Length: 192
Image (tube, rainbow, N blue to C red; front, side, top):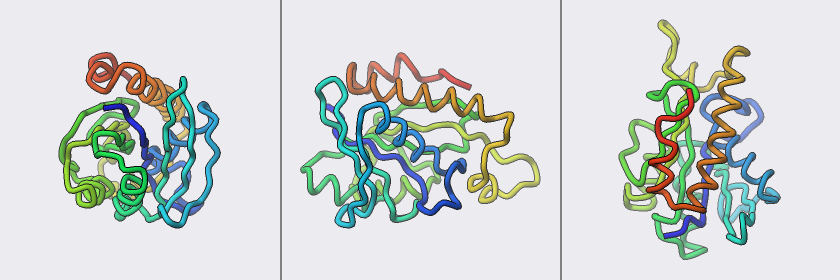
């Protein structure tokens, strides 16, 4: 199935901008910028949406405004409206268990402790949808996980973050061009 919806996960409000937990929003912003999508707030879909076209394929981009823990509400509203199956949705989000800069693409899987993914799985009623995880690294010794996840990247980490964002855009385009299984073989393990 062709991907039709790409969801970047994050939290609304300026205080969360550029934090580790909002890297999914950053990927969605890059995709909209490169594919000519313009963000518009949509209350029905509980988020910001941009319709973009990549090589003739229409793609809906979504940044839920529901906060991370309720991201599934927005995803479900969009999939219902556009009559999309879960297999046509790509969720893009941060992962503590991957080293900073590392990417991992999967066709399905558990939430792995990520509250945004728990919400999407609950609202879609399945774990069977593609997801792109961007490594943000584990919290340093002594730092609470919440503080790490909601914190900003250190200056020395920015080049690796930029490389990761660029690679994430390549992965999204490869998913559209070649499909998720082939893209997994090309990109998993890259970065970081």
